[in-house]
Length: 515
Image 1 (tube, rainbow, N blue to C red):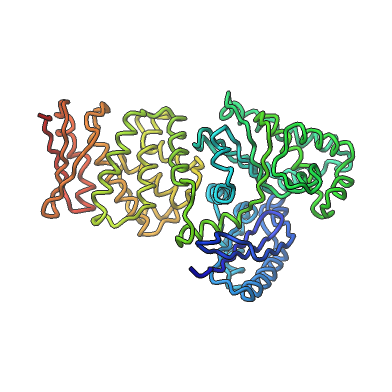
Image 2 (image 1 turned 90 degrees about the vertical axis):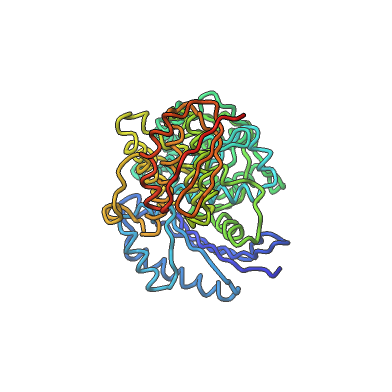
């Protein structure tokens, strides 16, 4: 199979990065060129909340250079993405329009869950040891300019992922008035800012977890590894090696150590915040080893593209990580596990049987599965307003791998599971949803309502169903059960009105006791 030339543009907090890849089924992913441009977009955003005109003009000039380079390498497709520096800027919509009009490049703003999921994909797809490491208790730590992302794995499952808005550039800007020449004092101030967030994270998420490995993703860990191991081919630092290095760093100071490590003066200002973050995370997690992976967002974009175009087949089940994350959110809000599992199974069975009728795809099936897992989480807050509370929880919770629109689809599917269905015009007034996405919500909500009606007693009387669609107007739901299904048969019509309206099919429950 011929190679595909793909380019990834990563607009970060303190640099803009272009990577050009050669993608092929036989050779996998190969980087053929990389260009970095130092540019502290986050400095404006984190200090004044918006990106200035001069900075936007400079970004446009960089993009025009990137266009020329992509053309020289015969790039067939690209994806340009921005992260927190643009995402948190109050004028980012104007910024995106100016960039497109001046350069023709469409810059996509990733939400945090999308950004971290792509970074995590780059790790999982490129590291042969990844599967082995996450079996033993692992924290993946992505230290960026705007925030820190902490993802915990245990026994091959993603347990939780949380974002702490104290990245290296944000820390530097918040402590701009501290005398940076006094390294010990500056490090102490940074540590005090981190401590409260770390205490909260430990209390809610670490608890008694045994973390053996810390996989670090960030700009400076490669320099640290090179300094410690003197150019040896080693991709792991022990806890003791890092602590020894940190003590030397604090003693000699940032400027002297930056020179020894081969880091330019313009980049050195972010070095101390990075060191303090790494050390505090080692202390909190208790990890024995730091694993260094030289991956970045561009690698995740390349792998995601190759996966979608079926150039490469992933070794790791990424969709399972999304559902496991949703299961852990459900557990956090004490949902009825047995009920939720049955609703999940019934909803997906109905969905699969109706492929030709609902016209939705695999991704929408995943969104229905997440909605089924989280449909009752709002009871934790208010049992009489479950639907609205569930919607609020889902919209306020980071679900790794979902875009903002997908998160809205899940949240509204859950809201309409028992609440009134809002017309499109009313819903669109407070969201970014298109009509097609609204129809996805209505279809998923109709299926979820029907599945819920089959376990109205919450006693899991019906665990499996067979569906028989007759003359395109009636769907027989055939079940074998030893239980009395009087309640389910009597109450099911309350849950089928939306289903019948959307699909023009009337569900009918046919129960018989096994012989």
